[in-house]
Image 1 (tube, rainbow, N blue to C red):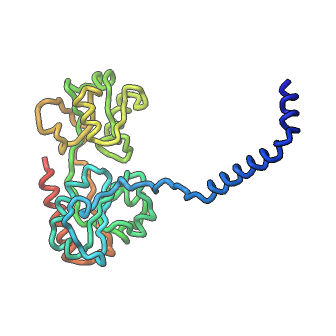
Image 2 (image 1 turned 90 degrees about the vertical axis):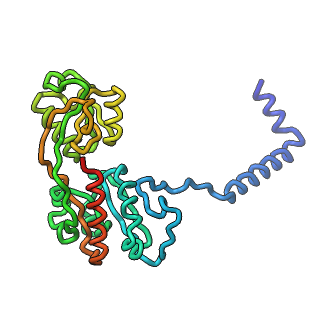
Length: 276
């Protein structure tokens, strides 16, 4: 029956005009679509950096001056660092802006080192040497960091049995000595499976500490610089002592003595302010 209907429509006297009109409508619609402006998604926004110009709206530096670029491994260091550097008169005179970028340590590449992509960066010598054995051709130590201790923190006394039966937090950053590598060594010595469901990884120390505070996990590793170390709310057990904290490394292309002195002074002030 449907075939009979289609046959009658096809041979209807007005059919040619209808087909012509429909073809014209489709053609015009196609041309309009092809000539319409193409809507493109904006490029990925950069959420891994912060600068003096972003946090200090009153800064009007000479755009002809270079930008001082600094690399750190975690965003929590950005604002304290900028609050110290943005007000320095020497840096304000020599640079148009100060930009702090944070990058997971695993994403730092040898190319970034020998291209000296950053004027200043925090790192550990063994990590830099692993990426580029001759890294000292490109970067030199500006300020070594003091040693620190790694500890377990929990609301109950920390014993091997406690670690084996409770929820453990670790940093997801496998390059972190205090937040991953050293505590994992302890857990492996106790034959505790670090891939078990009760071992949970966190993207930052702040997230890990928050999880301990809320009871999401029972024990975490941190350092003697942690706010957990200051009070008597949590039990503590030492994981390791006298750990090298690395240091600040400056590009050898940055030779302005006054700038180097200003950076060293400000970084020392920041270090003193954060000392336990």
